[in-house]
Image (cartoon, helix red, strand yellow):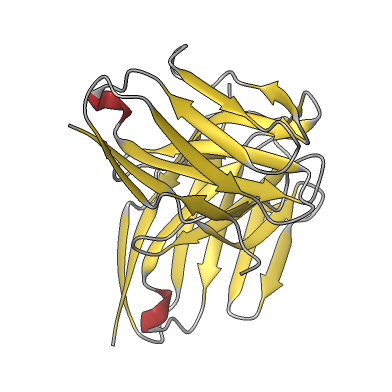
Length: 114
Length: 114
């Protein structure tokens, strides 16, 4: 089955710096890669996703890149702000049985210091 | 609100007690997932519904776990004879897509078995 590895487990940056979180996956059939942000005491919030037919996607300060050959994808946050502090999860899925079952990484705790 | 709603937010159960966790998905969402999130870990898949049909229950840890969505909207996750290892946050997610992509999570129910 699918396995998703996520690095680093913790990341500390100064406000205004960029942050990069990387994930690798094992199943070459995976075709959907969302990123979630989870704040303390809340459920995961979908912040951006990418499908396997696209190499890069941007949404304001957030971008995701996908390298299908190497089976890795990354989240890039530019001009970080204290409110970006949270745990970020990557996930991968493939269509099996007619639906996408998400397999999550272990998470990255991002701290943005003013 | 228009988001996924879960109740109760917190549940303390004595070992051996039965519990029922409720999920109200976003209105009209076809797909519904249950995930289990242990402390410091990413969510792990439990089960998937497409409308009222439970298409995948491969992630349910044991036959003490049971989920239903009888009318294709509200879902209930039931755990019988709870054990300490059942302590976790139980997350529900819904998606407007039959394939289950672009899933939106609720805040979760934190279950503590004592």
